[in-house]
Length: 154
Image (cartoon, rainbow, N blue to C red; front, side):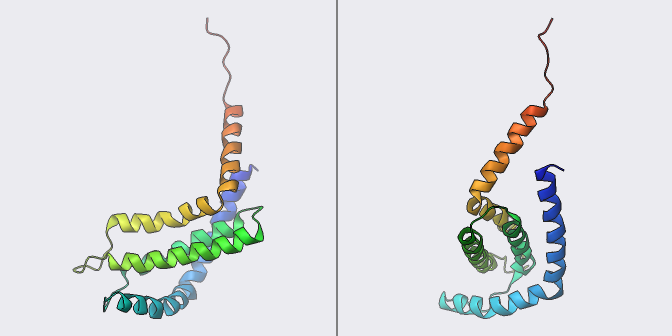
C-alpha cells in the first residue's frame, strides 16, 4: 500500500474514533475549561454576555490532534511543543471567532467558519513542514514516474 493511502486510512480511522470521543464527552470537558477562561478574557476586553456560536467549530481540534499524532519522525519537542502551541492557537481562535458572531442570529461569518475549518491543517503544515515537504516531494516524484511515456511523434 502506498504511504499516502496508508496515512490517509490511519487519519480517517483515528479521526472517526476521536470524533466519537469528542461527541461523547470531549466537547463538554473542553467547554468546561474554555468557558471560564473565555469569560474572563471577554470581560477583561470589556465585552459581556458573549455567546459561543463557534461551539460547533471547536471540533477543529480533532483533525489537528490526529495529524500531530500520526505524523511520523517528529522529534519529541516538535510533537509535544507543536501540539501545545497549536492547541493554544486554536483555543484563542475560538475566543476570537465568538466575538465575530452576528448579534441577530448568533451565526459566524462564513469567512470565520472557513478559517476555523482550515486552521488545523494550516497549523499542521507549519509545525510539520519538514514531513509535509518530503511527503509532497515523494508524491510528485512518484506521480512523474507513473506518467505514461510517449515516443517521438510521427
